[in-house]
Length: 448
Image 1 (cartoon, one colour):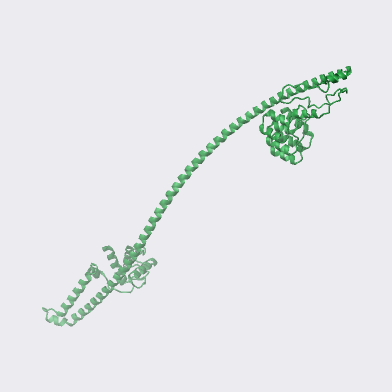
Image 2 (cartoon, one colour; image 1 turned 120 degrees about the horizontal axis):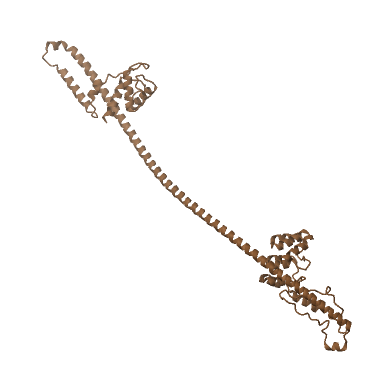
């Protein structure tokens, strides 16, 4: 069959390109290429020098789709080759039942039936006529061809030449020349049948070799497919391993993300709680500062009253001392009742001041200078009182800068902040009142 395919392609080498492409497509079992070639005008009934058609090649290749395509394109299903084969015979030899049923359903027949029908349709010679010698080249070759499934040809009936009945022989005497021609014809026919049988055997052997080659190719393709399948399976396993690893990494990332989110939520909750506590503490501190400010204002007012009363007592005492100095000299052994009353009132006032918040007010009072709103020193010269104010401001947390005795911008800012906190005028200057307030605040800070 390999030689048959090469001969078919060789025969159509000089045909138009669409037919050549159609033959190549049928040889390679390419349905798409065959369909394109037919659309471009390829001949579906092309035959080689021995009468084989493309339909026979498609049947030999067991390609039902190509058989259907050629049949639908107008290929003749009952063409008989020089070896006495039709497409049905080729399909029978390959054993492809699908192609056989398709061809039978579309009117395909075997070569034996076709040649028998042609022989029966020829007119018989007259009984009294002498048959003319037949030329084997002019005789239909299909009649003398055996079916492809048989290995030996059947004897050909010679009823037309020497098989006449007895009555004709009795009435018509045979002639020597006619008998000689009939013998030569039978000899030539026998030789022709022997040659056809030999060609058929060679063709069968060639087909068997082609089938063996095809089987070897098929086995090689199966081996290649097996190797490819093994490689594909190995690649699939590798891909599955990679996918498994990626899934494990994805699960790990999801777990870490979930843990991080939980930790973040926890920290956010703690931060919100701490922020709430800080807000509460800030509110409490504000309330305490307000309460301390009010208390300090009250204490300042009380202290101012006591200082005023003390000043009044001092003036009264001085006046009393001046007015009674002379009688006192005369009466040295007597006690002035007014002085006793004044001292008693002073003792009561001092005792009342000592009970305010447990502050040892007496020692504080003895150390406090008299209140005065005038600055203690010029702003550009160092002063010990300003240095002391700076140290007290630093102790209280107002950040006045270094305690160098010079009231700079930071010292004035700290003083204004302190004056605002204790309810004084925000002058930024150090005077006796501010210094006394600073000492009182420092003393309360140390006593807590």
